[in-house]
Length: 160
Image (tube, rainbow, N blue to C red; front, side, top):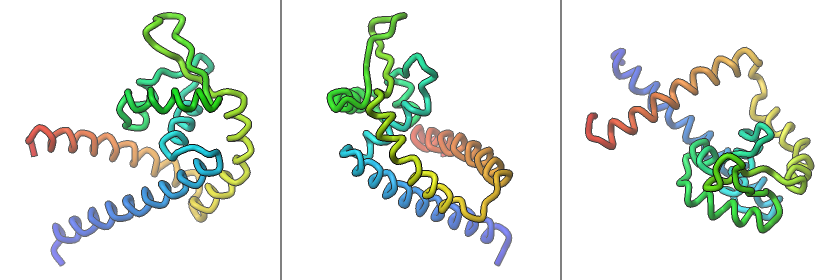
């Protein structure tokens, strides 16, 4: 097999591995969401808020950007999560046009109940992979994500 063909096959294999991992993670997210009585998208929104909130709340735009969701979708889903008492949506003290979302104690308690299962699940996913390898993979995957966004943009404007 020629070097170019081997390289192309390696890229295809890599992409299919990513597709498989994505599919499995999606099923895992659906399971976590079901345990809380919410949708997968709502689960991801809660996880994004949990990740992004530094104590002053998180904007809907920041959540939408982290998840690649449309901001109006985040707004509608966070309103539902607020009704379910999983988060608060007060207006920003700096600009009343914006909200700063935070998880409620109810949400934090529910997420904490799942933490032992989540840690066990993560250990299963990362079995045989040491911290140095995880750090290396995260750096490379971050670069690949950035390059993928660029490639997608190029394709959408007809540059490729």
